Image (cartoon, rainbow, N blue to C red; front, side, top):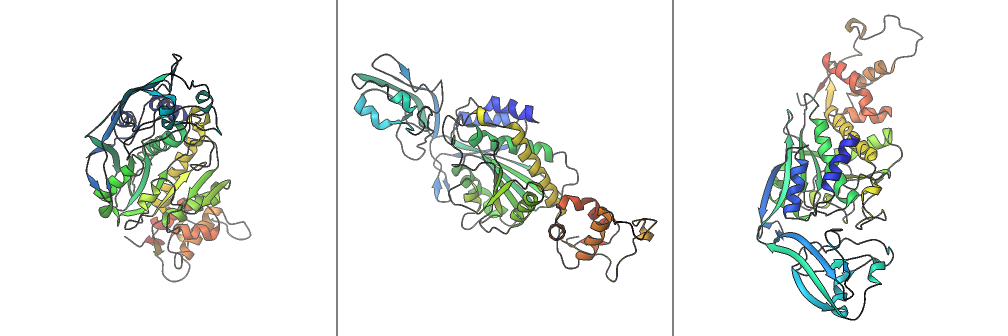
Amino acid sequence: MEKDLEKYFDKLWPICRSISGNGLRESFQILNEIIPFELTEVKTGTQVLDWVIPKEWNISDAYILCPDGRKIADFKVNNLHVINYSIPVNQQFTYDQLLPHLNTLPEKPDAIPYLTTYYKQTWGFCLTHNEFLTLPKEGNYQVVIDSTLTDGALTYGQCVLKGSSNEEILFSSYLCHPSLANNELSGPLALAFLYQQLCKTENRYYTYRFILAPETIGVIAFLAQHGLELKSKIKAGYVLTCCGDAGKITYQTSKSANTVADKMMTHFLRTSYTNSIVRDFQVGGSDERQYCSPGFNFPVGTIMRTPYKLYPQYHTSYDNKSIMCFESLKEVVMLLVDICKGLEMNQAIAPGHHYGEPMLGKRNLYPEKGGAGIMSHDLMFLLSIITMSEIQDTPLEIADRLQVNILQLHQALQIALREGLVIYKNN
């Protein structure tokens, strides 16, 4: 998987993406080789909840010609050089006139910052502070931004993997940044390869919905069209962001902080990923803000490694392939596969045998020789499930009480269900 993750990273990396436009569509075409997204185009001017879909932005070139003949802030060298959604410009400026349109990071003098201007029509460039310090203050600068802002559409994608139930598990990430690595591409890649893994799962109970959209406005557009319909269906959900570096796995809870999504993820991190971090919901993050927004309040948390804003390369040209760890990205995918296995197991159960401890021997579930021997784990788990199902509603609660990972109970639970020693309450 790591080689495939890297291969698709390399395909997606050069593309200049934004919240709309052909770069976004091209990126979906590449990801559709892994996951069959159904794409929705929401037209410019469409009211989506309290927001309005902006004009579509496309760009082919941008640069500045200095008075000394140098070409700087070249979009074709690094697409972070132009502020995303800049209006078209072809004009000469003095240094003083140009200065308000230049952006640098003095504290990171060799980094190009990433900036946007989606909802205000203006323009600008980003360059390293060291290059900025070399600019001549006399003479004219030729500024070129070959972009368009037209009536078009915003594109988002969704893919539904059906299970036997209409209850859904939601996975969501965003696709809207240009060439940023961990902040942009780790989430979509994890989402796509998670789909690939879950396709292999037989007899799925839950239906799995995968959403990939431009951050904020794209998920708002999705919720405007589908949010009320899905509100009663979403059992648990996770936003995937910044999960491709080598930092500790970090989970940010849903706004409610006690949903099944929260309980299952914190259970796995506590039992199997002890070198991890759990933190409370925060409003300044990614699309969990929209899923947990007033009126919706979906049970959606966020899975990351080093959180956005907390790693030094965030929203700069330093966020490139050099900070990616594809082994770490694979680990996030496989953690989410295990989370889904746990959720599939975690349907409410009740005793199937109502009085007294059932005799396991006549069901060939007990060793032929009893006595002083140590009880096997599987036998202990089976007896625990049978006994505790009267007071613990779910396998997760039993696993927490036993202080083991829920997946360790899988075989014993299947035996108990097969023998009718416990039953699912919804059957």
